[in-house]
Image (cartoon, rainbow, N blue to C red; front, side):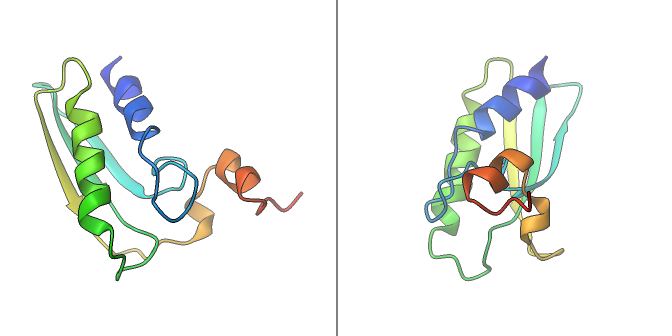
Length: 101
């Protein structure tokens, strides 16, 4: 399934300041794939003034473009709603030692 492959590609892109991939970090707010296999991604960053914003967005775009079957990729950067750790996967919380257990 194309969506699974796109998610796997997103999991190969890491935030340059936090050793967790952008998907598990919760930076991907929306992922849509239309019937023509065009991918739309709405994402955020952990901080609005991140100096690596262009780099991270380009890494996301390139990783998804490399997925077989993807025709085009559009990445939109948003800051609403504001990102916080509640968006992180359980795996990411454990990796960073932020799990509440």
